[in-house]
Each structure stands twice: as C-alpha cells, then as structure tokens.
Image 1: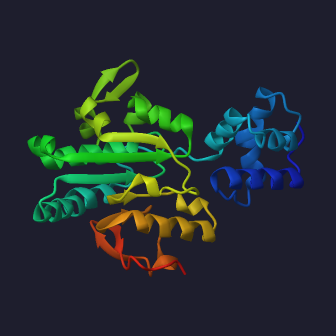
Image 2: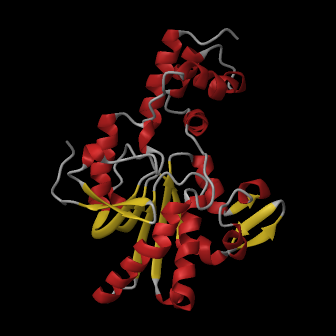
Image 3: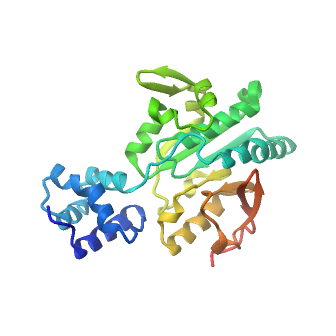
Length: 283
C-alpha cells in the first residue's frame, strides 16, 4: 500500500481527535501507518479515507474501539515512577488517613484516570493495604479506575498479568505478595480486585457522575491533548477533588497554565497538587 497522503493524514487526525481527544504529533503519518494500517486489511478497506468514512457510521462501534485502542498508549507498569508511590506511602496517604480520623470518617475514594491495563490502581491498592494492615477491613475504600480503551479496561478488570508485565515492577516483592500464580503469570488477589471498579470513560465527556475523590491520579495522559481540552479537563478534575484532596499528574507534566486551580507541594521528589480555589476557572 502506498504511503499515507497528507489529506488522508488530516482526515485520520480529525477522526482520532473526535474519538479520544488525542492530538497526533508531527510524525502523525508514520504513527497512523504503524498503528492503523492493519485495520485496512482486517476490515477490507482500500485506504484511510474509507477507514474514516466507515468509522463515523453509527453501527461501527467495534472499528472505533479498535482505532482508539491502537492509537492510545498503553505503556504502563506496576509502581511506575517510584517517587509518586513513595509520596503516597510516606506522606500523602498517611496525611489523608489522619484527616479522615479527625473527621470521624473511614471512607476513602480514589480515581485512577487513564488507568490503561490496571497496574496503577492495583499499585495504589497494595500501598493502601500495606499502610492499613489488619484495620483495612474497617475502611470503606473505593478505587475507581477508568480508561478510554475497552480492551485495556477488560484486561484490567481481570487482574491477570503475564510474567513479562510483572518483572518490570520496581517493587517486585510487593506485587508477588498481593497476587497468586496463574498460567503464564499472576492474578491480583480478590482483596485488591474488590477495591477497584473499572469502567470505560472518555475524559472529553462529562465525568461528574463519578462523584468526588480524596485522591486523583491522571498521569501521562494530558500531554496528548491540545491546550484548550487540557485546561477543560483539569477544571473538571478540580471539581471532582474534595477540598482536602490530592492530585497527581505525570512526572514530566506540570500545571503551570492552571496555577489558579491548584497549588503545588513536593514530597519524596514528587509533585503533589491541591485545590487552590474551588471557584477558580482555567485561564
């Protein structure tokens, strides 16, 4: 098949933006071909224009799902970016527990946005169980984990990971302690799976029905959106964060253009954000 033409790349870029908000970069031609070319033969299409036309048809949910799944990045691992989890374990979560105790509450809600195949929410669950120990049963803990990719969410819900997905963990012993051997890998134990609720969610859409959270992690995804969508999502995330809540983005991301929404702290080498003003609007 000949290389993708400029007008085809533009059409695919517009389609991808409408489906998941992702802005394809300057190498979009290569990216489109490397990730979507096989869909042309799978669906019997003669080019990318036909792909776009078919994907926009109401009945073509499976094709749209496949496009989103192949375009979005699923690079993740357990305890990705150790500084974040050090901050959670040694500073952020103990502080939240103390605040909850002072308020007479044992209800904790966490949102792992763009959770991919589930390693992040399961990592948070392990840290929570490590901190709470036997008293975990007296807490009502809910980890809501969302991603736009249906296949990724399905895999995350199973809690099953192959051996090569586990050996990359920076805290291998902890992963083994909270999982059981199965087939060619391990499955997260029921205690962890019961804490996590996985669902498909597009951050472009309204997510107010998720409720409010003590802790939100939205790491390594905002960089794929344009500035306007990024600010809109951050404003709506701020509305989901409880007044005493904490918010993490990726280690290479910053919230400088939304400094009126969040204030920044640093713990264990990681940036932690808190609400600056509930009434603020993005600049």
